[in-house]
Length: 184
Image (cartoon, rainbow, N blue to C red; front, side, top):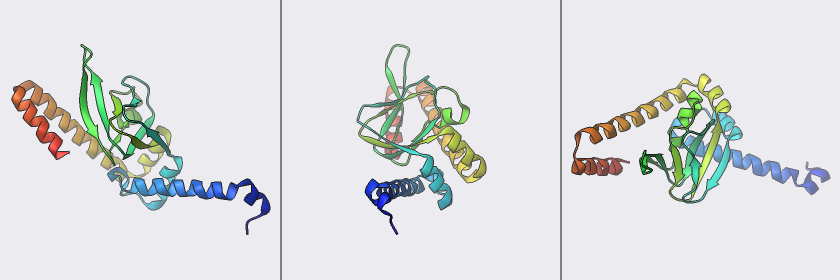
């Protein structure tokens, strides 16, 4: 039974809305490979402690060298991961899309961000703070294993890029880049 105070103040509706938002984030996290093996209660906990952030196209989400304690999961949209060359040119390291995540390096080692991340279109993100994420990572080896697998894949891609720069001519590098973009 709803009492008059709750009904008039809107607390019942507010609580219901918050629960719906948490449930929605939990469902979204279920579709992210990093979190697929978690049980519903664990995903719900992560959803509970997470936040949603919407960013416009061209917005800078992270800056290289800034302190970081947050993991970002892309719900909708795309982002580019970039670094600046010594002569001021932007170098794109990766393009990430829905269900991809970023910010994991600073999240894991507590060191400053290694790259900048910029939205290439309107993007919605789920954000998980380091303390909340690491408490779950310690308890769920499957999540840790999935994160390590993703990091290894990204390192292999970086190794291929370095190899391409060192060994291929311009045409070979363009062909390699086009093949990589087609795979993504």
